Length: 115
Picture 1 (cartoon, rainbow, N blue to C red):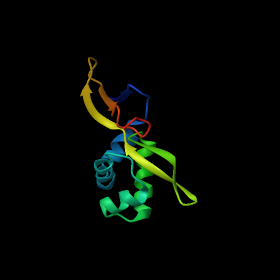
Picture 2 (cartoon, rainbow, N blue to C red):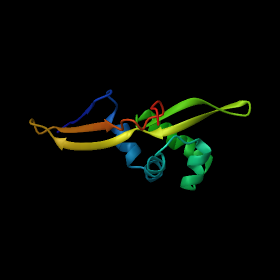
Picture 3 (cartoon, rainbow, N blue to C red):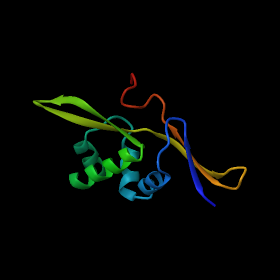
């Protein structure tokens, strides 16, 4: 039995997606990212060190579960902001008894939306 992945947006590694969601710190970060937040705000909200927060956000971004936008100015520095793009994940058997993972991206809640 193999694990197949499909997405309405693009194809990502199931291993990366499931690995990210299997990590408690990553799940906590996804839970607090209802709106764009800086790394510092995410670290504070999850009570995690900045180094851990950066690593987990990289993992979530690589898995396609979080988006990053650069360009929010604070003084002379640009700050990245992150937001969760995960709407729903389902894993099921298809007609050939093969596992299939489907990810629906959150619509209208991304960094580039008009919210």
